[in-house]
Length: 114
Length: 113
Figure (tube, rainbow over the protein chains, first blue to last red):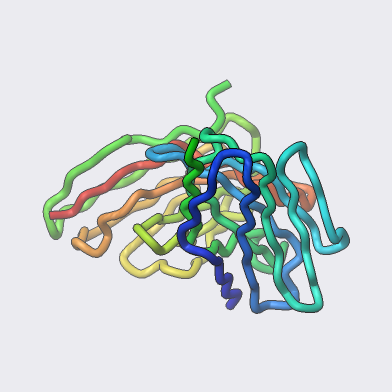
C-alpha cells in the first residue's frame, strides 16, 4: 500500500521566518495530497490541498508544491506567527480504488517562537 | 448544523470489555472513515464505508468491527478491548462526486487499562 514519509518530525522557527515541511509518497497512482493542521486536543483541520494535475497552489501565507516525478510534495508557510504552532500532517490518496482513504505521514510539530 | 459528531468524548475500559464508538454526520456525505491516532504514528485508517451498506478494511482493522447503520451513522466496535487499543479515534466524512476532502469529528479518547 501507499507509504507516506514526512520530515522533519519537529521544527522550530522564529516568528516571521518561513517553515517548510516535506513529504514523499510511494504509490505513483496517488493523485490527491492534502495538508492538515492539528492543534493540541483538537481535530485535524484541512488547510490546503493539491491534486496531481497541478504543480503548485497558494493560499495567502501557505503554499504547497508537488513534484510527481520525484513523488514528493511540500508545505511552505511564510511569515510564520505563533498561532501557526501546531502539528501538521501530510497525506496522500489514490482516489476511488481505495474509497478515497487518506494515508498520513507521521506529522511535524511546528513551534513558532516570538 | 453540527457537522461530524462523536460520542463519547472520553472512555476508560478494562481489558476484555467491549464498547461502541458512535459517529454521526448531518452533511449528507456518502463516505465515512474511522482512523486511530497514536503518538508519533500519525493517523491510521481502521475501516471505511464508501457508501451506505458497504464497509471495507483499512490499514489496521484487527480487533475492530464497524456498522454503517444508515447514511448518517457509522459505528466502531471493540469486542474485547486491549491496552494496545488505547488511542484517540477520529471519524471522518467525505462527500461524493470525486471530491476528496475529508472532514473530521472531534475525536474519542480511549484508555484501556
